[in-house]
Length: 567
Image (cartoon, rainbow, N blue to C red; front, top):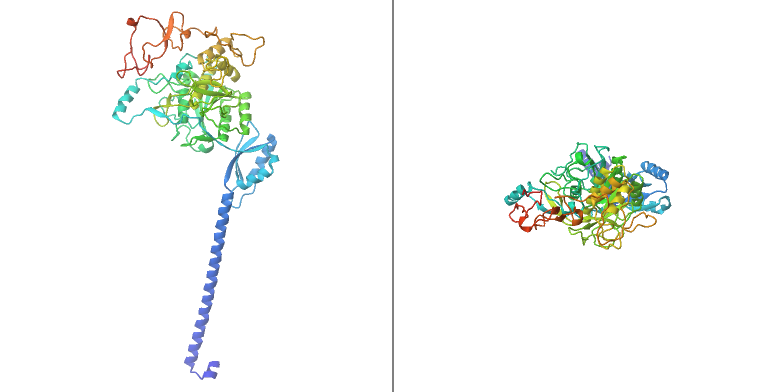
């Protein structure tokens, strides 16, 4: 109407203006809507960026830290654990704390906490007796093995054929009297008289020299900590546990592999094996909480039977729950705990070996001399072979040679278990004292125990004879008796080594170490000048009438007397 009034336009022109104005109006509306949408999108992008940044910041704050938390009493521990299970979660939906394990032998838990929660716990530290890091404990050497039989070439296949004709016999077998007969008590449980527990990286049961197999009733295992979900019976990328176990339980007498200190399998030895895998595949250390948890499990598995726990680990740091747990396992559960003295070649205390309730084992070589890498201090209790020791490998049937107090430890642990089968009614303290009393004194004989060898080199048969013949609470006789017996008998050195009345002399062809082991008229000697031949008691013969051993490889008898050599 206005257009018609002012411009005197035709109807078509009026309609054109009307349509144009409507189009402009709709265009402006669309532009306004588009601007609004762009602004909204920018706001949402900024909000999303802020949210992502906040989540990243929160994620950094929520990084979990592994700690050991001690309490003043068991009820306080239970109340705390119950509250943590009902706790509110973080903005990311994660719990502020995760309880990994509640220790049975002390008032403590292993747990994971966010850093923010850890700071809050430290502010209220009076509620706790301690809050400490759950540290990693490395294995005590022996993991870097040098293979001495590995089949990859035709020449090595020939050597493998020779290998089937004999087994490697470590010098440690005779040095520790592991070759001597020790029979289990026939009146004791013949299924599992004693338990030997290897806390390590797992044991490869597929090795032909391991006389245990899953499901046979003589072996069982469990994974702990970082090794959860892995195969304790089939460790990968780590040989350490298999090396340790090989020294203890390798079959022997099968013309292959090696012989352990508990040979011939569980049916004859009466020793059942427990494997606690605490070292994850491809790793070389375990959390201290895993070691403690595994040690408790070992004692539970044995029940009221004797148990020896092998811990081939060493770290120069002590955590608060360790002492309480090992003390209670030793004093209350009757467990015998054996650990490595360490491979720093220094006087440092290494744990768990430095605890009073644990037997600390140092290493010696084939000449019974202190290994340069072995730690030495007043916590060392016994010495055992740990230098250039033949043992088993995981994932193969090969034999390797390694060194470390890790490998000395299973000599003591394995022989302690074997001795215990002959005197199962004796306590862990009786067995420990017998090992001390009968050890072959080395080093400074005016100061026993001394820092390098402790009470000396373990002598299995002597300890066995002392326990079986003289009784559980017996002491080895001293050359200088005192008016009042002490808890740790002192042995005054004499010009000639004295034998306890219960140890018989060795007859013809029985393995020995020194002339004093043999009966009158015999000498401890090798049949030839070949150093690989075993020492045995023999009558002295004129040189021209001494027999000679045939050599498998043309220049030396690889198996030693009674091994690959047949004449």
